[in-house]
Image (cartoon, rainbow, N blue to C red; front, top):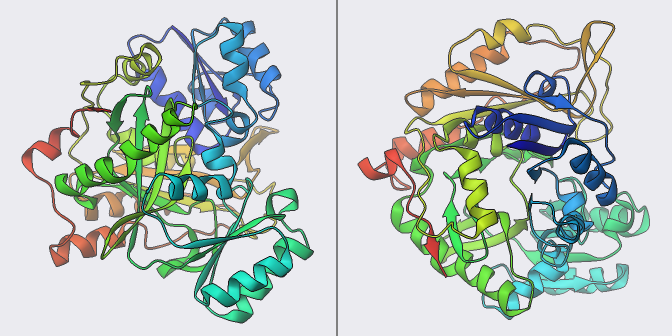
Amino acid sequence: MKLLVIGSGGREHALTWKLRESQLSEDVYCAPGNPGIAQEGECLPVDVKNPLAILEVAQQVQADLTVIGPEAPLVAGVVDEFEKAGLAIIGPSKAAARLEGSKIFAKQFMQRHGIPTARFLVAENFDDAIKALEILGTPVVIKADGLAAGKGVVVARDREQAEKALDEFMHQKTLGAAGERLVLEACLSGEEISFIIMTDGRGILPFSPAQDHKAIFDNDQGPNTGGMGAYSDDSILDERQREDIVRRIVAPTLAGMAAEGTPYRGFLYFGLMLTTSGPQVLEYNVRLGDPETQPTLVRLRSDFVDLLKAVREGTLAGLEAHWSPNPSVCVVLASKGYPGKPETGKQITGVEAAESLGGVKLFHAGTTFHDRQLLTAGGRVMGVTAIAQDLPSAIERAYAAVSKINFEGMQYRHDIGAKGVRRRTAGSGGGRSPRAAKRMPRSAKL
């Protein structure tokens, strides 16, 4: 099969790498790609926000299947264009992609279908936002309605922080049109986890669980980012918790979308908070997470193309995905200035030394190649990913690789995976059963 991946970040590097492993892959392309992806397959130029441009690239390479990495083309309707042209693609329709494209739509959808989530109010303007703030009080979570590259969420601990965020979003328009309308919601307490599935609209195939680290600094301090690292470990959720999430959240979401005439197909990411009253939805993403994809796909032992074909053919129900029992960790290296305006053009050294370590894979994100030098070209530069027999060893291996890499202004968190180690030490959160160590549960059927 000829396979095409759309995107240029660490998630897309991981996708291209995993697709290339498949026995079914003949040629793997990525558009626009990056220097790391270029080592896995041929990179082609494209405007990822233009669905017709993406369709043209797929036709050019005669792609048998296209996998969309980022959310923007999905929200713009790329799947609809492919379907009209009769080309195979993985992802939701434009209507279904509203689950991520509009936070207001997503919260109101959850409300309509009884899906557990935090209490919320919608603000159409600044005055509405102030009134909502007075009703909800603080701490409060303020979310831009539209796409904001992971930077549209502020957890305001007090009134001053909340009003500052409202002013930035609605008056200063720091997020442009994305922040013209807002959702304000009660701040939930608990542990945040990422639950990702594949679905053909009926069958549900859960991925190995992961936990992201959104804040820029250690101990979850500082502003939110697109993600500073993640780890994947079966002990994040036990089998009972997984079944509860599928029953109370995943299945009602897919049933609700179908009932509203917008059946959902593709990857669906549930950002969840594990509260004392059970799991509640923080957000939907209509694609794989970044950086969760990197440590998750490192653990996948099934043929990824086989799974994608099942999504396209509607045969996902009853299928099993096999996973390595070994945990994995991804540490994101970011440029100075991120998550604000990053400094770029800095030479990156030590990549070969890092990749020479066993059990390590570097996934490029914001990199470029110029005058025979690898340079930084974005906020998140690369995800240093490692797998080992247990979580402490995976963490140690990832940071050993990080120590080999250097570029001016490099910043990263030093505590990726620490929550998982504490969970295991405390004996909470389940643990890994013999069955869970080999595979996730069979896919369910609605």
